[in-house]
Structure formats: C-alpha cells, structure tokens
Length: 284
Ligand SMILES: [Mg+2]
Image 1 (cartoon, rainbow, N blue to C red):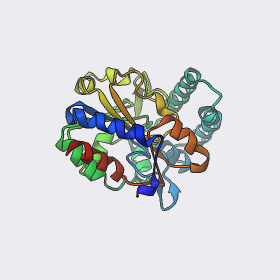
Image 2 (cartoon, rainbow, N blue to C red):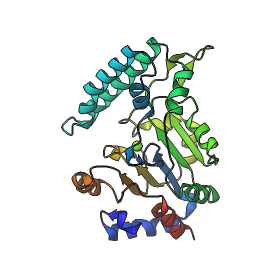
Image 3 (cartoon, protein in one colour):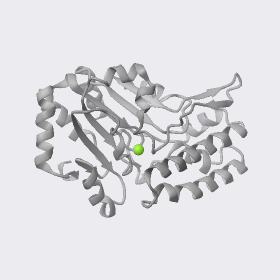
C-alpha cells in the first residue's frame, strides 16, 4: 500500500521518527477521530454516511423532522466548508447547527428505538489491520483517545468496540453525552457540545480520568481525516508530534493543502498498516 502514502517532508518525518524512538512507548499517546479515520470512508464505492444522515434520509422520525433536518443541512453545511470563514466564527456556526439538531430531536420525541433503527440500517467497517493497531498499542500500554462528534449513540462507541471484540483498556472515548428518560426518550444533552470544529479545545481536560493518562505523554500522534482538524493539539504542551491524515475524497483538489498541514497523508481509503509499521519500527 506504499503508493498510497505521501509525506510532506520525508527528511522531517525521519527526524520525528527518531525522536519518537528515543523516548519509546512511555511518552506516546494517540488522539484519533473515529468516522472515516478508524473506519473506512467507502463501502462498495459508496460514501459511508453519518448516523444523522441515515436518520434523515430513511425518514425514521416524522416527515417534518426530515424536512427541518435538510434545511439545517443546507443552511450550515456550506458555511462549514467555506474556507473564507474564520475558525472562531465556524465554531459558533457548528455549535448552533448541533444545538438546533439536538433541540429538534428532543422536541420531536427521538427515542432509542429510532436510533436503533438508524444503526440497523447503517453500515460501518473498521479499516483493515485495525486489530494489529489495537494489539500493539495495548501491548505497549499506549493510550488511544478517540474523540467523536457523532450526534448520538445508543450503543456508545465503547459498546461498538465491544461488539467487534475491540475493547482494549488503553482505548478511551470522548463523545457527546445525552440523557434519556424511562421511556427511552431523549431529554437532555451536555454542553459544551462536541462538534467537528471544537475537538481541538481543552475538551480532553474535561475528562480528568483520560487527561491524567496522557498529560505526561508528550509525544503525540494524531489520526484524522478532516482538513479542518489541524488545530487539534494546539492546547497540548507536546514535545513531538506526528500528524497522519486520511485523505478520503477530492484527492487532486485537496492533496496540496493536506500536505501543507500534515506530515503523512494516506489516500484511497487504505488500511492501518503504515501506522502499525511506524509503531513496530520505533518500539522494537
Ligand atoms: Mg472523520
């Protein structure tokens, strides 16, 4: 799969590798995205949709929710993608989008049954060789912190990993917390909402149990796919950083921008083998 791997600067990458090797496993932690990073971006040549997309497109709640959801999407999505809107403004926009979505779902009696239906008509596949990735990080006790802005989970990511026997105790999750009443109806969501533009903030510090595990591990490896997530680790006082990004779409158009921002760019929905090789290389 080597021809799907691009380096912004190979020499610099080798230097980063040396620095990681010098400090070995005890200083490393991963911060990773979930959707289309640890999971494949395409299944049978189709883009894997977000859960909220399935809820909308399959019309699982009422028609009026589907219509309103589509309105929100057409209003906010272009703003999310507009490169001329500065980051703080974008955060505000995204926060409003998520908030209005949650309010809409609460108002319209979203229940866990709706989410179960949504998940049942949803397909998700982990990237190949993820088992090796989890095995290696677990063997060397390297924390893997997964941050997801996914709007809702009936089975938390945690449960999802269990379902696929991938629940290792070095893997930790940060995602939106929702509350349900006795009838399984959604009644509450926790602020600050995690959306696709604020994963960079001191979010991890709000989860002290996780933060304590990583705060002294100053060599950080980021795994992500979105072009906009490059501020992810700005708040963290790291010594070495390696940014590995999956470029899942518009390769011709976006490659230069990805290479400007990230150290390694992986294309064509490839597997985890580059990351596993990197780990084997620095740890053995
Ligand atoms: Mg993603």
